[in-house]
Length: 277
Image (tube, rainbow, N blue to C red; front, side, top):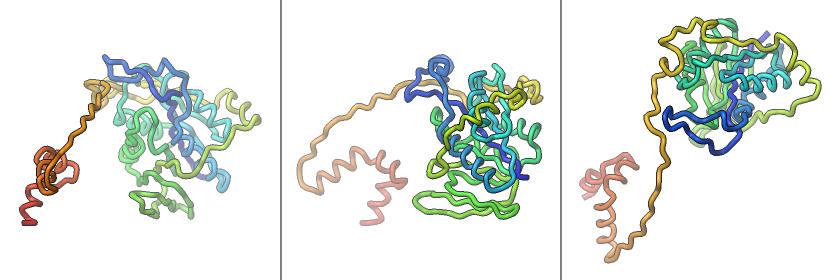
């Protein structure tokens, strides 16, 4: 039987959310939550594998008590159990700390897993880092932004779209994939599944102590990045009219914006002009 793990995240159900200017974190308490869209696609991919092969699905999430809702939704749709990482000291975790905590959970609760599925990114941060960082922590093969999967024994074949090119990759289990939004649209919940979502024992909660996490590695203290400042950037646009011959207009434009253009194209304009003379 395949052991599948799906990492899910609850995100705010709004397009804009206030920031805490002191901590540089989102005020998640000001909005209701939902399962992150890309995580929905990862869950559907796991459910489709379970329809084709004997499989057991464990859904994992980290967050406040309300985050347990995404685990109940996953179980109602067909996941077998849920693991909820919930501790106040997890607050403020960056992607490094988050991936480390998730990896510790997997080692403790699901050591014999075959495949970990994550969303390609989350709508509240869009870093796309947790999945690949977790694979590095667990020392397993990984493929990001996959749009199709096939299983052949202990081999996983995936297809992904990268820079307008489609790549087909093969890797052995255990492995990790992050699922794009191209396919695997999440199915609707059936009434029959709601009962199992609220059965006792389907969801377990773990805190930092359960994972053996020390104070130095906890959340903000164990994070390797810090938000120093959060602000809204004001974009001021100015119209500029250049007059004269074509050659003079081009030269004046380059003189004004040479450094910006060089940075954008990754080449030194002065050097390019010298090579062409």
